[in-house]
Length: 209
Image (cartoon, rainbow, N blue to C red):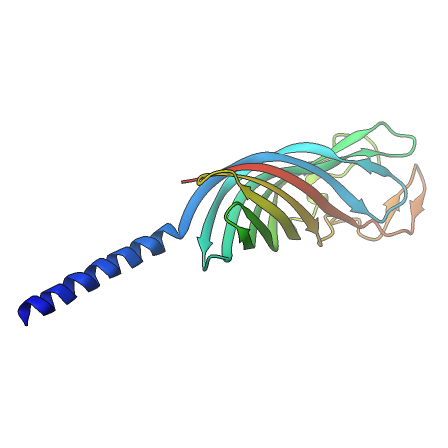
């Protein structure tokens, strides 16, 4: 009888140990880095803009609830903005430095492929527009918070290495002081709303430990 109880005890202990080990392996941490192709989606017709490239990099955590669904929170730095051309003025480049925190749900179709979707909370670290004119926007002119919806795809190249492509679709007007008027040359103010939203296409390389 004692032998049977001892066998059962060791059997349960081994299974609990394996279960705990499996549970730990379902959560991993990693680092990522890559490039942004950033621009604004703007309703103001007085200026034209084009995308600019910037760096992005940070850390992430992956947790798998099941074989098919997981969660991936991240915290990373992101250089955003756009190249801007004003009428009658020199070209300039809007530079925005963000600390972004997305919370993504992962839908794992295969071991090597996953789709991700979720919200992102962005916090402006600094921003500027280096042009000396009435169009110039200072750091205090930009919204300190940016809310976005993210969607993308991840390819797991190996157990530790992953490639990612993602679109961040901003829903918060980045302008803080001029949300309803747009300057258009000396002495003229347009009544068209100036609503600028971040649009960022990201490509990244990640490594999980």
